[in-house]
Length: 105
Image (cartoon, rainbow, N blue to C red):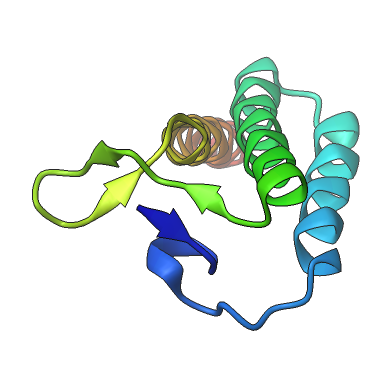
């Protein structure tokens, strides 16, 4: 399945530089982040974004070829981005909880 948009084919009219800007923003945040688990999550998101950007540059579209439980199609890069968000979110909430616990003492 050919995907001309962002997620699930949404926002197909977005300019190309929006994707590049997103990857640059993730790299800047990853460099400034001190937590290892947050860096791993951001790294997964960056790799997935670069993979999708490479397909978009070379073929003009992103090819989604993995079925997603009857909800549509994804590719490996989409799964890297998804799991990167989960890992980053886990690290964020773990760090926030530690900060709250240490402030309460």
